Length: 197
Image (cartoon, rainbow, N blue to C red; front, top):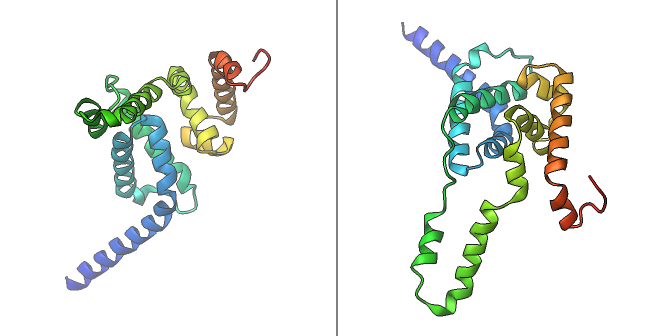
């Protein structure tokens, strides 16, 4: 009986070591994608934690010679869709300490600093690029983030989303068209475009 317990413990340790060797190099990329999807560092951390927990629990189903990168991102996207899409849209979280600093600062010499904090919030909530990305249909936004932010190849995106490469290319093309149309005045205003986009 003691030999069986030792064998099981060794097998479990080997499994954990193998999982860590594949997962740890991807931690930053998975977090960045989660942050792009959730737009909130706290939710991104929760999503990453849940993703890696589910990945570890189902690691016995992972095919050793297949694409671990695609597999972990597929789990991340499924988690995002299942958890965050079903929730009602929540207001963005505001840093409590910064908010308190704005309302409880009696020192008139720090008035400029208060104005900077208010400008920070105004810029945070009114970023035209973020608003434009949020207006994209979910399927377009995910493909755009995977391609242009995470910098995956079409084939990798197709594997993650379990769809043909042509679908990835089509969604990406449409997402870029929509963004170009929505951001055309912004681009002209800031000198990124001088002619009609």
